[in-house]
Image (cartoon, rainbow, N blue to C red; front, side, top):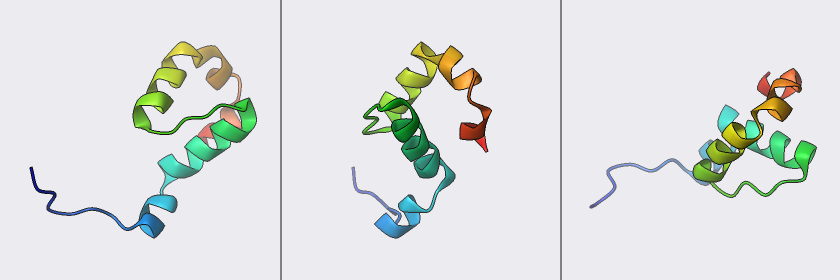
Length: 57
């Protein structure tokens, strides 16, 4: 399958999802290399996430 479009690295770096992932990695000393890892962490550790509302701002 051929990609029709892909964002530039600069555009990816400027997304809210990228900023949220970086904040979660710093706050919890976790490595979340991709969306699947972030998603799994957010499910497995939802209590941690719920107790840190500043991550969702």
